[in-house]
Every structure is written in structure tokens, then in C-alpha cells.
Image (cartoon, rainbow, N blue to C red; front, side):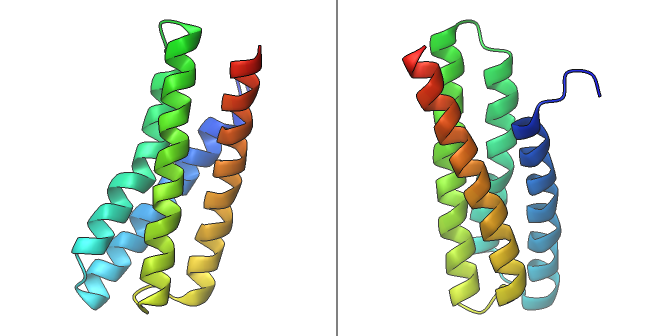
Length: 117
């Protein structure tokens, strides 16, 4: 695949999983406040990565990747909250949390590496 970018692909696939889970919770549990927060934060990760890759400068790239990292951490929070309040199935929540943790690790490494170069 030409120009394969793993963090871009992982964030996109993660956003799709978040969208599916939000739809499921909204349809079955009629919970809209927490799921709206999860949807916003979970899809924002990839959007910021896309923006970072089109950055005007290294500083712009680092800033957007740092925002993506913050959004991933916020997403992790909403996932834990939905799991612990029993809106999200524990197994599904743990899969999403693991994916989210992986994104956090990748984004943290990208920001740190970019800042030191």
C-alpha cells in the first residue's frame, strides 16, 4: 500500500468502532450525553492526525499530534465511564480501551520523537 501510515489507519479504524458502539448504545440504552462526548473525542483523534499530516511546519505537526494525543486520553476517560456505568459491555469496552491505549502510546512517541529531532 502506497504511503501507508499506521497511526492514520489505526485512528480511522478506531473511529469506526467508536461510531458503531455509540449507535448501539444510543439505540438500545437511549444514552446520549456520554455517547456524544465519546463520539466527538473518539473521531477527533483521526481528524487531528489528518490535519497534522498536512501541517504547515514541524511546529504545526507537533501541535496537532499533541491535540490528537489529548483527544485519545479524553476518549479513554469516556470509555471507562461508559463501561463502569454499565452502558458499555465490559468485553467491548476493554477492546476499545486497548485500541485507545495503543493510539495514546503511538501518539506520545510521535510527539516526543518530533520534539527531540
